[in-house]
Length: 188
Ligand code: SF4
Image (tube, rainbow, N blue to C red):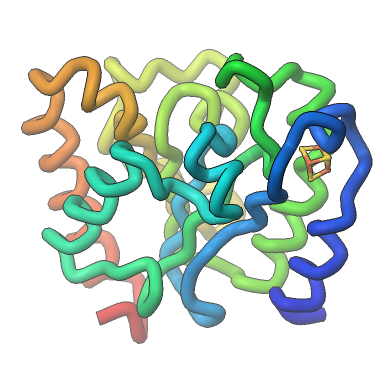
């Protein structure tokens, strides 16, 4: 199966109750041969309205960080979320909702076979790396699991709230660039 076939299936998903309040399913966006996969927690209001991940103010900030290390969501990376439908009032996804939605992300992994996964924020990091993961403590560190390098950095929305962490986030993206140069074959 390819990503577009999977997307078509996902757009009709009713596996959890978030389907009742969503405007659009936010399946993901990016290059079909991406080696670098970014994973956030779930869509916010702008994302729900447009059906695309990270398109509000935090998305603009993310795009700036991507640009700084020669990444472009339309060219050489992919962006997805743990849950594909917006939790009402931007609350954290419930464990049951994350559990119901994970098969879609697992299929995205299976198709893309990323070499590097960057978790954006605590919710994604605790789901993908370690349930006790602390972004403040362990951001920017690469952990190898099942042949994939995982790293977590601050969620761009958190950086908008706490801009004093931006230099650390920039350091994480610089480290990401080094890791891409080390393990990826066609990202650059
Ligand atoms: S959040 Fe995921 S599991 Fe729930 S309805 Fe949306 S696509 Fe389906």
